[in-house]
Image 1: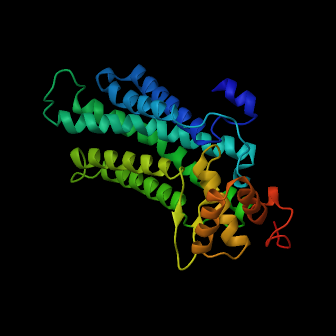
Image 2: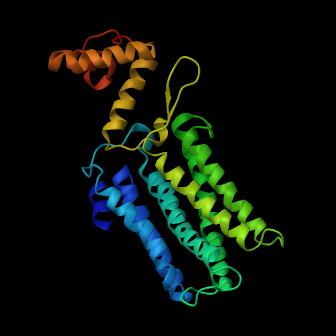
Image 3: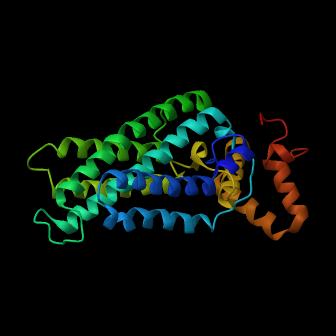
Length: 287
């Protein structure tokens, strides 16, 4: 990761491959830090299992270094904002492991090979106490970044909404843990739900598509470079928003370009992408 950061000149989490590797790294690091203080080695397979799954998934992603999409071209904010996201996600992976361990162990400490329910509860709480403010700061920085990139602090796009829901889930946990009726098993269930929300928020980076009314709006602010889906979706977005094309016309253009060979593809790019624009129906429009 350090070598990648030196090569790209920013935090090594500018595309989905880098982000996934960073998530796997912080999940492992978060567990190891807590494992030094608490006897939780027997639940380590859960946190490291999450990290291993992420690392194996990263092996399927494009690894080449590509230019970032315009919304991400702010190296300081990218490094801090996304870095804080990976730190929060990684620490919360250990709270998930402790929550699952608590649900299995129960208040009667069913299994001798597991830590006691009291230790599991404390580990989960410690992890959330660290991860929760980091997550909150990440959201605030993201809002500031959105005001710079898009002239609005909050847009309720799928990524922003899922991050807010995730943060609220852990806020409920911190409150519930101190309530007699919610302490114990209900609080542990909230940890599982919360980490499910973390994973859902993470997977929103693949692509976010909504279809309000008669047009398609893409969550371009949270699309990472380095994936074919990203390039296709950003290109189709330019077609619809800059060339006043309907979704049906876009599909027809894309299909024709695909079936028509290189010449047809060149004409399609000239008509839709500023990088290839020499002639075409969008020639006089603002790029």
